[in-house]
Structure formats: structure tokens, C-alpha cells
Length: 259
Image 1 (cartoon, rainbow, N blue to C red):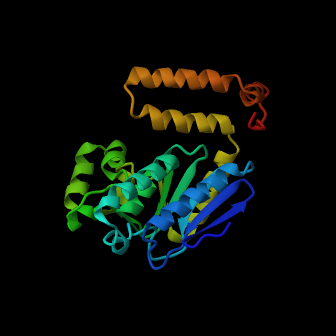
Image 2: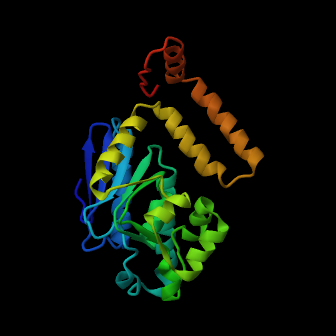
Image 3: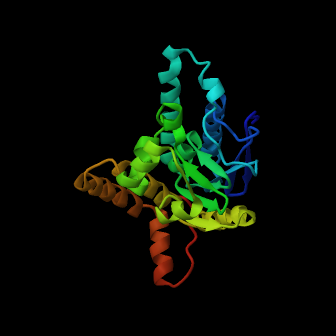
């Protein structure tokens, strides 16, 4: 499958999406379309168990949306592009395989919103996160005003959204925005290590956890628990659940087969 602004490689159980739109991977409508196509290709690959999202450039993860392409969009088509980005990032958040973002350098605006939609985020010491849209007289449109408060809390999220300030990886880690900080040269290795561990887990349980966390986060507690109970019953009936319980009782390592 050919792409202009990104690369997709399968390495056994691992799917790797590398953003490659020099100089800083600014997101435009074409890139959003290609990301959607890449996700479809990964979903169709029965061997894939985890996804790594990375940048080909050492200068940035994604420095934001492509403002030059935005200003050329007719006013009547702006909402369509915003809805397209929201739909894509919703699909990333609900994707049945865990998506790990590896962030090295600026991760701003639409790039930050994309990272927020991923399931795990690993950052280098050079990473910076922020939603600077307010400095342009606009606001985030691809989920930034919604996911950021859910991840780090309303108070700090409002500060970042209203000031447009960015934060380094250390502060992002303290706020719960990133899972781990590693040296830039160790980003790929750390992401692969995490992906390898996740790939050994039961795929249907992974999918159920992603689904219940994503959907349950928007529901009242009791409704979320009902969703969890339904998912538990569904997963408990699988062959992989029986394999996991048997292996635990026999003190062996389970071999899950996505059944």
C-alpha cells in the first residue's frame, strides 16, 4: 500500500506507522485520509497485535495541523474537516489493538490531539506537549478540549488551553499525560518492548479493555460498570480465558490464540 505522508510496515505481530511529511509532519486532510487507510490495513492484518506510531523526523513528532492548508479551505468546508479529524482520532482511541505513540520533539496542536487519542505515550527528554491554538485566535478542534481534561484534570488542562503554553516531558509525566520517559535513542526499543508484552496478552481481552475504558469514560459509573460486566461475560466465555486460567493453575505461561 502506497502512502505519500507516512509509511506503514508490518514486522510480525507489530505494525509501525511512521509519519513522514517534512519538515515537522504538519497534519493536512490528505494525511488524515492516509492515517485512516493505514488503520484499515492494520485491522485487516490478522497477525497484527500492537501498533507503534512514530515520526521519521528527529525535529518533531507532529508540530500541529498544517495552517497553510487550513487557511485555503472555504469557510463552508471547515466543519467537515474538523469532523473528519475528530472521527479519525475517535477511531484511534477505539482501535482494537493498542497504539503506542513515541514522541521525540514538539507534539503540539493537532499532533498533541493525535497523541492524546493513542492508548500509550512514550516520550523522550526532548519532547514537548501543548495546545497553542489560542495564540492563533482559535481553539483545538480534534478533541483537545475534551481529551486533555480527561487525562490530566480540568484545572491544568484549562491552563494549557487558555495560555497556549507547552510543557516538557517531565511535567507531562507528572500530569499523567505520558507513561514513560526514556532517552531519545531508546524510544524505539522501549516501544517495541511494551508492544511485545502486549502482543502476548489475550487479544479479545485487550480489545475489551480498550472498548470499556474508551466508552465507559463518557458514562456515569453505574452505566460504565454495566458495560464492564457485559464485556467480562463475553471475554470469560472465550477459549483464551480458559487457557489463561488453566495456565495459571498449572503455573505455566499461557498461549493465547485469539479464540
